[in-house]
Length: 326
Length: 234
Image 1 (cartoon, helix red, strand yellow):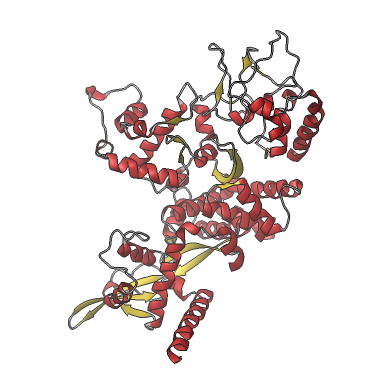
Image 2 (tube, rainbow over the protein chains, first blue to last red):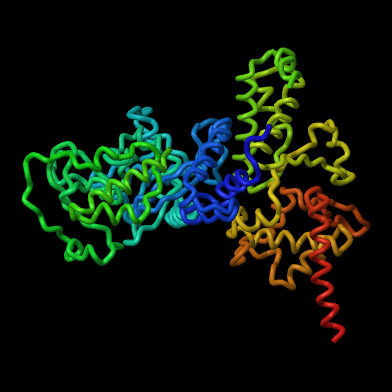
């Protein structure tokens, strides 16, 4: 008895065939296929995804969403959950290319400043021999490393080509400032890798905080994504570190409606006098630790507006989003 | 299904083991298809996944059948079985001792209606390859289903595609793309031993001869040809 019909199949096949899709695109596909907009028919959309995932779990695949860490946009993709012999086939990249990719991801993940990028030059200067070192651990057989010839002979132009290919396939991305960042596919697929590599997670969404804001308190390890900051803004309009209570500088995102001009007047936010005792902001209790739901603009605009009178509408908006997750 | 209980005891594996095998086969098919861009997967490769750990002789067939089922219900993909309809050439007779079963290979084909596929699923980044495939198949079709290699290139040259071109701005290594069409089973190669030496012929293969595909190609060709005739008349 078939649980899924052609509509589900079309959604799955579109992701398999075209790779990770932006939320807008995926929604428009959904609308085209079912005639219903996920924005207004959230239940139906979630129901579809739930049904699809129940079936996909048979083959250890998952249809999930993630956020691009550079622009905060939501993407959907079909992701492999288990690394087994079959999945190792699923790549068109050669062994040195994969080692190159791994080295870049590691460099980005280990960045303590959480910039989430490395420069183009640094990427091209990566020495693949170090990858071999890492995988061998600290053992050195009679002092010489068994570096495969393919690794040693991986030329600069091969690195450039590989880099371009990886960006095209969305494993990596080129950021606005010309650096190399983590692509959407990596964010979808490598979640468990990031956890194993102990990349600190964002306090708000619990995903790897590759590109995130750090707590100004140097002793504190908290980091939060730029797009997650909005959720931590309390009634008084400030962000307070959940672990050390230090106040954070908060820059509202550029795409803000005009009535919030007083905030956007300059890059530095005016610092209201800090109070040692902070009452729990109402938004904190609504922090979503589950899979990301879509964050529509109305909610973000609501959260960053500072007036206390907005608090009610904040709560209303936030509860709407919690309804969405069910 | 009443049979499934007996099937398991027949194979002496549990449902979980069976499900695991089916999942492995499906995953193999999906990942391999991605890796080789849609080239056919040999039945032998799939059977091996089963026989690696289990000895029962008809288990591979059972597992592959169930994988076929699941691919259809979960993904909407048909696991199309392609059988080499004609032996590739006379001088390979010695080598074709493979049993009929092993010569089978598989591709996955979307079961979605063409409109839906075109609108939502098709990857526009590969449409240049689809277009090229259509052109080559049409040429071979118009040549009667079989064409000598140099004739094919003669026609492709008129579109600026050369056998020696390794850096075509859209297709890259053009010869390689034609080779891929052979691996994807749109074409098959035949070497014909003639009085003047060996000639390589390209013939339409299983995927190009598939019913619906064939029909659509004929339709498109007749559309194009009718247009030409009309302009010639004026």
